[in-house]
Amino acid sequence: MNTSEQTETVIERRKFFYQNTKKVAAEFCDASPIHGIRHLAGRDKLLVEKIWWILLFFLSLYFCLTYMYAVIEKWLKDPIIVSFDHQPSSIYSIPFPAVTICPETKVKASELNVSHTFQLVRSGELNESMDAERVRKLLALLQLCEHDLYDRSETVTQDNDMLRLLRKMAIPSFEVFQSCDWKGHPMDCMDLFKTTLTEKGFCYSFNVLANNDLLRKEELDSNYAFNSERRTSQWSLDFGYQSGIGSNAFPHRVITGGYHGSLAVTLKVNKSDVDYFCGNSFQGFKGLLHMPNEYPQLMHQFFRIPLNQELIITVVPQVMSIGERAQQYQPEQRQCYNSNERSLRFFKIYTKKNCEIECLTNYTFELCGCVRFSMPRPPGAPICSLRDAPCCRKAQIRKLKLQAKVEDTEDSYLPKHYCNCLPTCNNIDYHWQVSQAAWDWQKDRLVTLAPVLENVHQSKVIIYFKQANFIPLKRNEINGLSDMIASCGGLLGLFMGVSIMSLVELCYFCTLRPYALWKITENRIAARRTGLPRNKP
Image 1 (cartoon, rainbow, N blue to C red):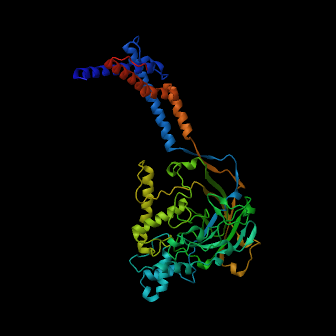
Image 2: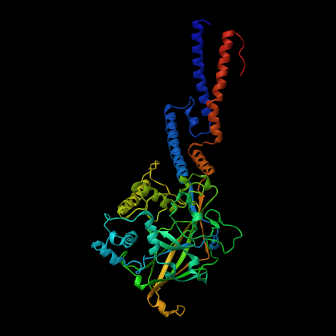
Image 3: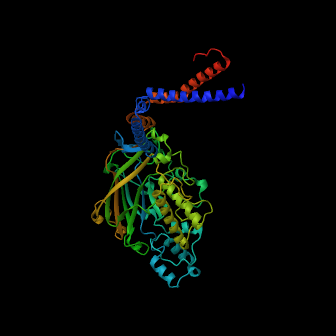
């Protein structure tokens, strides 16, 4: 083929390409059901008509894509809805709340007169060279006070000394509990309440999981002891109680609400031990209700049990679960973690509060080089002294500010020290209502008026579920993939008249139909060049 023939062939192909393009466009406009397309072709249409329909087409396309974007964005960001379940559940299916009680009186007067010892140390009349044990007891006790009361330039307590001294000075349980009733039956308080370490010192907890079920001991310092409970748990947050366990399961549970399914505890404080030095004018006890698998923290939430008062605490559980389809989403989309999706260093069981205390512990250790005495700590980590108290508060404030900063921004980047402690997908919150009244316990016929009780204050707290049933909450999928496709398809049909077959036709006219016309064109050019009859398509 010479140069002139090649040039002629190129020109002919361009001509056929232009003709074929117009032909495909005309066929598509004539056959497509998409609104407005058929008005864009035809010689009987004026230019102003075509411009009119082009503007309407793109205007309709704009609104269609805008609403489709809103539907897809909502599906990606908020695919989960929390709603009430269809049927109520029995409180027998969940554990009775764990109860932690902390005396406001931290030390017996016979062990240490706090006010007098503090005055002696401040005035310089007493120091460690004179009575090291007494001064160290004071320093350990001041870590439990609500205010800064000591000069941090002085000598501070050592690591293992801190817990030993606090445990030695703590009010023994037999001097805290007068009597206990569980489900209407008298019980030994020592069997119900176990010694627990909290940020308020050594307290007493009922229905809390044992260390072996809650903590990873291999990751903790050997001197750290969370509680003295020894019973093995027969319940988990995701799967509930083991089958066939019955009403004697641990953690404890009840069948009915009201007084017959209650925990009634009578507490006492020796009048000689009452000391207003460390706290404020309140004396008595602090209490907290929480899940049995949670580390108790009384810093942010608690109820007070005043002296010579009787409290009735009615509990309304708020139980959250997650549906099967909702579990298929990422934790950031459903805003919760399944138990197998997040692992903690110190705790075997993930909960939001356990995660927060571990996060604060790690950050405090990184910032201050030590941890507070109540925090779970790695082997060899020193306990913060009074001198480190400002640093510990700084760590806590920085964590709160970091949390607020992350919640205020829409940036997907998470800072280094942000722990992202989402709630568990299956969760129990115990909401309580408190009513109290003065209790003239000396006139109570059930109280033994022995001489030993004449020099004490007493308080009583009764805790029970408000009702025998509750309506649980459930995380469900608000719009699945099929719902999103149906919504987008409806918008495409409403604004554009587009269906699945319309999209198939569009693909056909963009691929297969141009290829067929190209093959016809090549056959014509080849036939013209060779002089042979043209093949029919």
